[in-house]
Image 1 (cartoon, protein in one colour):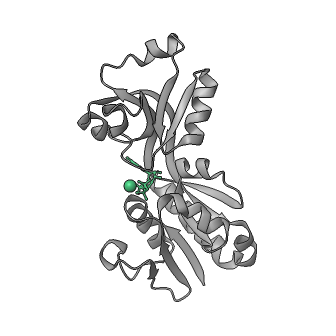
Image 2 (image 1 turned 135 degrees about the vertical axis):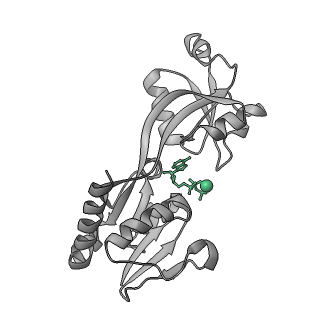
Length: 214
Ligand code: ATP
Ligand code: MG
């Protein structure tokens, strides 16, 4: 059995055409079925549905042979035990610093103020501000980061931005770009050796499907 870990939502939706290119079609949609294990047209391939940030963990420990995870999630996880053969160019967005409109971020940085930063991405935020020589207090959140500056929990947030409409709706603006994000195929290193006959063709099919999209 080959087990592929995916998260619901955009990653699942955007991985579907790549799976189809490899001849794999799920028998159900995770949103409607509520099942966490989803069969496919192939008896030897199943999908498991996990939290986006848990995908690397399932693959690292071999509970899934493969997975699709954002670069944001992979950097926070550290990537141990994972082979990352392919950037799938899906679920693209940017990791940004954002503040409430009107907050003088550049001024605060120049003055050497200590900034309170709310984020789910503490590793990347730590690294970003350390490289700039800005002192920060990191406040770990698990969602709705946009709220933090509005209620005085933080001066700034580090979060993913795609269209910017969520920032705009909450009177926030992006002030710094940290990195571009897209999702990658990840493979358990031991599984790649043991099941190479089935995993390599899948990597090859994904690779040519991504090439055609680009
Ligand atoms: P959870 O909802 O389980 O807490 P999450 O909100 O990070 O996790 P998703 O919103 O499904 O999960 O995002 C999954 C991945 O998609 C992220 O890790 C990131 O790589 C990418 N992503 C997240 N937000 C955006 C966005 N606004 N635009 C494009 N891609 C995004
Ligand atoms: Mg989400």
